[in-house]
Length: 346
Image (cartoon, rainbow, N blue to C red; front, side):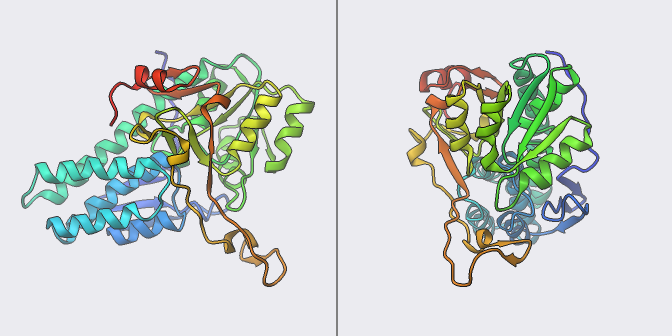
């Protein structure tokens, strides 16, 4: 497989000796600020407050958070409390529990005075593996696009959501270097505006032609312009290939089907949860309604207004053209094809 080398000047998470530094994504695109993290409590708070986000990155961050707990104490009770704290920080992204399970297994196999160092080394391996996985799935996905493609993305599924080049936006970056991208439309994705603040920042940094859309514009653009593909990430994919992603993804998939636009989900194998049968079993995080009622700290609704804030929705497998993984492309998505490509449940 051809490999295109892409380096990012601002990795979203990095090791700093006995600490971890996290790029504060709430400060982007105007300021590049790193937060030093030295405990599982701090890491859980950073994840919960959306300082860092993106399913693969949350898995890496949770692994480091678990390891940091051992800096204080290597007792099984301390580590399990840290695991529970981290697991409670964001319920939908399965990569978080995948990362914690890896760390629990390492802790069980290496009890001793150097447990902290062993756990940090395992978290380093998880981060390095994510870099390699991103490279493979981005290369697989780029093959699905034709020259001079115009694509739509949703939320942020770039290097800020992973430890590597990104998932859906990673595909765009690879395809762009192969001369396949003419233009990218980035959905803004309320209320955190990840598409606006983060994806546009990434695309513009790579000098990839791009334009911002409010979420409600995507169907109109599909109707009035030639759109060659929709590319999205995922936070959890069920055994039957139903996929949970940032709220608004389901509506985007419906619009894509109506306009005969291929709809691709790009995610590592760690995002699959083969223990649940379908999307109805995926827990959907409901965040503080105040995040919907305000923008940049200012109220945008009448005093006393109520709101809903489901952070994710589920796109049925029947609306997905293909799921791109580092192990291959699942096309069309189904339970049998998921098993064939991924192998055994995790």
